[in-house]
Image (tube, rainbow, N blue to C red):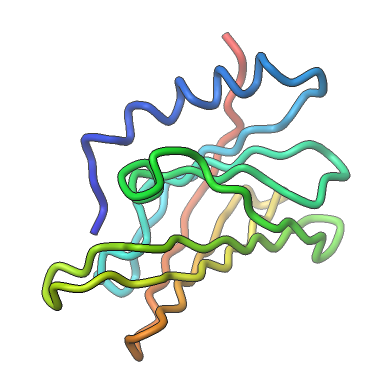
Amino acid sequence: MYFPGKIGALSAIFAILGTAAAAKPVVYDCALKDHTGDGWVAPRIVISFEEGADTAIVIDGIIVTVNKAPIVAKLTVRDKNSYKLNWAIDNLPVGNANTKERAQYVGVLNTKKMTLSVKAYLSYFDNTPRGSGKCTILKKK
């Protein structure tokens, strides 16, 4: 499901977003391992949000390919070290079913451990793809 040719645009998109905003968003660049092997969890997800915000910007190779732009995610504080993110992607092509799917993603970003775990809930399939990995904070150059 992941589309590797599109991932190079992620840093450029967030560089533009970061310079356009007056506040200083934090940008997390997360490298994930797909634990289920279904391809619904991208190997790299970039998340940007400002302290105290209730939304975040999320982008990965799947989002770039299907949506052509970053997605706004709902951002909820779980505790002093972690956030819950919710976003959805519509019209995801399903290679083995000649159809399109809606995936609702739930992520937990732990800012102390610098980790992200993600689950994808699919409308028409019983499996729940998931992945997790380490994050780094992107610094402006």
